[in-house]
Length: 276
Image (cartoon, rainbow, N blue to C red; front, side, top):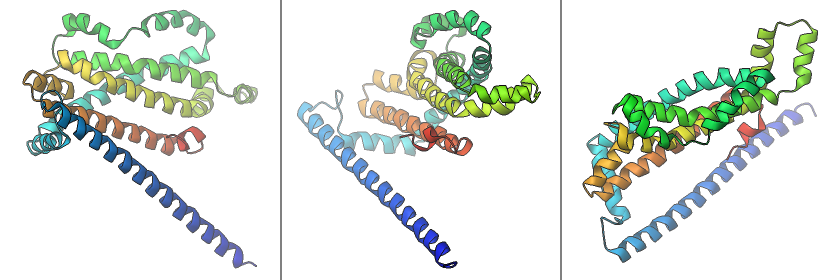
C-alpha cells in the first residue's frame, strides 16, 4: 500500500500531462483550420476583385513580408514601435499605480480626483494629436504621449478596483496587530490587489498598442504606423498589409507576455490561470 500511493500519484501526473498536451494540440489544429478558412476566403475575394491595390492576394502579402524581413525594415520599425510601447507603459504605470493606490485607499482623494479622471477618460488619445503636434512636434515625444495617455486609464481603474476589492478583514487584522500603515499597504493591500493589477496591465498594454498606429501615422518619423502610411502613399498595399500583420502579431505576443507575468507573479489567482 505504501508503494502503491506514490505510483498512483505519478500515473495521475502523467495522465494530466497527456491531457494537457492533447488539449493544446486540439486547440492548435482548430486554430490552423480557422486560419486556413480565412486565407481561402481572402484569396477568393482577392481573385474576384482582381485589383492588387485594393486587395492583394495572400501570396503577394507573404512575399512582401519576406522582402521586408530580408531587408530588416520590418524588424526595424517593429522594434521602434515596441520600444515606444514599453516606454509609454512604464510611464503610464508609474503615474497610474500610485494614484490608483491613493484613490483606492482614501475616499477623500477619490472624491477629489475622480471627476477630473472621468472627464478625461472618454476623450480618445487620437483627439489630442492636433494639439500634441503643436506642443511636441514630429518625433518620439508625440507617440509616447498618445500611447501613455491610452494606457494610463485602464491601469488606473484596475488599480483602484483591486485596492477597493481587498478583503477589509485582512486590513483590520493587520491594524489590530499594530502594523504601520505603510507596511499594510506594501504587505497586505498590494499583494491582495496584484491579480487585478495584472489584468489592468494587460488592458493597458492592449490600449497602448492599439494607439500606436494613430500616434505614428502623423507624429513619428519611424515605426509601424509610419511605415503603413508611407507605403499607402506609394500604393504598395502588400507592404501595407505586411506591416498591419506585424502590428497584430506583436500585439498578440505582448499579450502573451503579460499573461505569462500574471501566472508568474499571481499563481494563486484563478483569473491568471483561466485567462483565454
